[in-house]
Image (cartoon, rainbow, N blue to C red):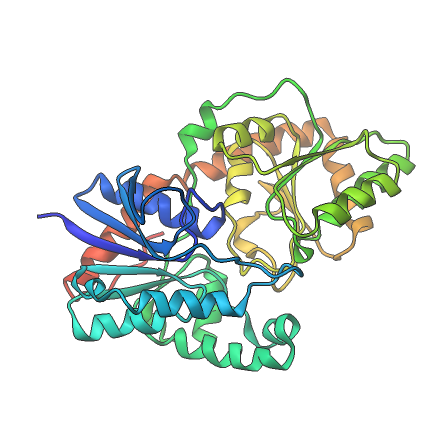
Length: 393
């Protein structure tokens, strides 16, 4: 008899792009091949009936499509409450073997836990990032204190938490979560798909892929191109993604007179297409200073043979993702001139460039989704047997 998994996350992949929902989707694809049935309870970001089947997953609309972000690029509080309230109506969730809930938007964890208490389901929370006091206050002002309290409460709502980085595991323990209640399972990639993708004929030096929001610091990349141009270096940049900062970034490109050096692709729906553009580049830049540690795009870039250059920041990607000089480089100062110097080093040292390309691919191979999915399968089965999960990765 198949085992039953319910996914709780408001943004359903592939209808809404994003790292968290892509992770949940890829885990599901593995489990579907290993005697699991998967249903996803989400807001309705697809066309057609409220219940559909796609790629083996049954998608259930708990409520209508809602605007996720306000005009300033921040998550709308109302949407998070709305999703939690809509989830609370689905009493059938108590009859699943496992409920796998994405950490955000937090409020949905309350009804999820209730269903586990009155039924046979076990709640697992995929915890992607710990904000802590500073980020909550920066993001929401004094209202952020309520968010901080909610984060602490929700992190203890179940004895089964998955951290996607070792940094995240340590941060969760800092919130008061017991160490034996946290299992580390990293992000993954479709390594074979990336390996088999072909490069575009049009070549670029630098690439960024992700949302265009303030904390992503994509404006730093634009300034890097300008900085190097003034030094006499012709450097090209392609930007994949969309978001609230796109218009201001396009205006900055024009202001700095580098329109011939920078291309905006917008959203690219096909993963294979995105990988082809990655392979047409030489260096992937990850300038974000608010990631919570994990990043699928860093692994995808490495699998494409690209070294990753990123800011070392307390709220950026986890230290474990970049092995200095092996699959990328850290920039210690969070400014575009420091980033430019590091980028220049990579672009104009041919021997260094080839060595790090080979190392990047080798590093990425271990993170194939088949390995990550196998970890989840073993983890879920251990929970169903009331055993303590073991960290293998």
